[in-house]
Length: 128
Figure (tube, rainbow, N blue to C red):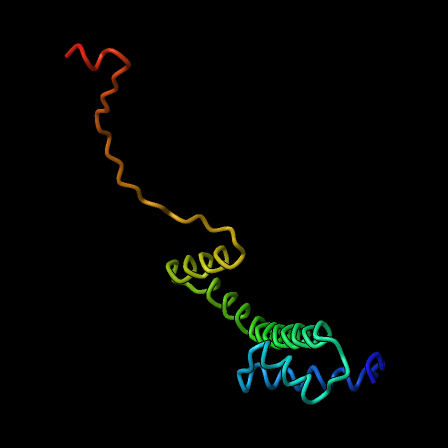
């Protein structure tokens, strides 16, 4: 059976199983590969690891989708805050926009102390 090509639905079923085992049942990658050998036994370890990577992509896509669903209401709220009569509220909304667009400048305070540094060269050490 090795080398048998799976159709798309069979591959997707394996990715879904991997997703469940990885994120809901907390399987490690090694445990997943062992599971594949025991339950499928028809593909290489490299292919089983590819299912693992595809499950991660699926996980990331779900998170991006959830965050994107929150984005429109958040932007609407920022518009509302920018239109507020209180200048402090407007400024905080602007600060948030600047922060989330990556254009903020972090203020870093430094306490610098200058000290005298004595240097001596070669024979000067013995002349004292």
